[in-house]
Amino acid sequence: MTDGAASPVPHRKVPFTAAVLIPPEGLWGPIQRIRRAHDPRVDRWMPHVTLLYPFVPAAALAQAAAELSGPCAAALPFHVRLAEFAWFAHGSAWATMWLHPDPPGPLVRLQSRLWECFPWCDDAGRFANGFTPHLSVGRWSVREVSGAAAQLQRSWEPLDWPVDRVCLIARPPTGEGAFTVQHELALGRRS
Image (tube, rainbow, N blue to C red; front, side, top):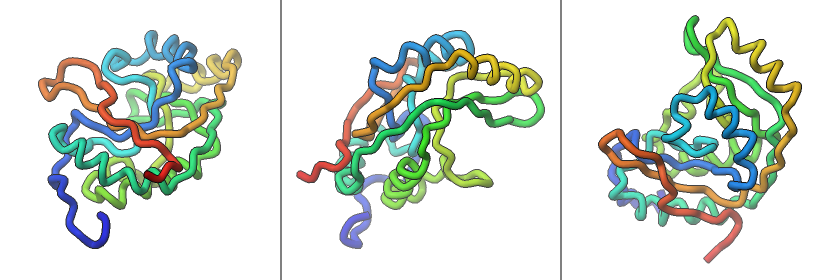
């Protein structure tokens, strides 16, 4: 919130919007090859690192963009490298494999700045280790994920990603359809 004033954005969150980092489309090829084979939501989400999700109602995205423009402008652009695979186990049945953006520090700081503006959008940080920046590539069974990660790692060519914007994305509230970019907020550019 800015200048101590209450946010004009409704204090609600919905699963139809998000604040994310999206790699340049030129880097998508190898990521999408994995996702097409292993990610049941490949048609819903573009490759991304989630910063805030669920996020504000779609009708409030323009207001949210205005509120986040200052924190984004105060954060300098940075580079990350997508070189290593890791995974989260979800109980004993399945796991989400992801690419680890390195170094994670700039992403953690950026997410923290955005979260300060929308503290009720705290789902991405509600884990034992807090917010863990990651770019999901798919689901595997818990018993197969370690071997699959090792196999993917052997042939993976690291991707260098210049992070220079935060994207606010939305999809139809019917639950059908893909997320699309609604607003792009430049890092390190004051207006």
